[in-house]
Image (tube, rainbow, N blue to C red; front, side, top):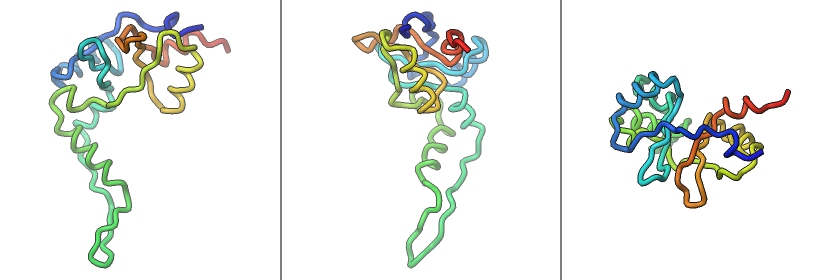
Length: 148
């Protein structure tokens, strides 16, 4: 079975200029957990409810120690950078995750399943041979075709 047989075709999308408030309202109204960010028909990012939660989270300063006049971080300082970026974000372009993993319409369903489990993601934008968005496949789409 191919992705095009199970994907959701009517994809709700946003542009990189759309506000974080607009995205939150859209996710709540449509009862979805994330949206692709589109520019000229191409997927340039993705925003999830998890990303929006960073707006409410206080940035966590990474633990560090001083040693011989140097700072040694005990945690990855890139996490602080990510947290701060999302904390101050006002638009989809500022808060979105990129680059985005996508999958071809003709890919087998098992490929999407493997990718989503390995990367711990909930959705994959589906693209055609020109990399234009044609659908989205979610964990719900995959669960609907499982044979237990």
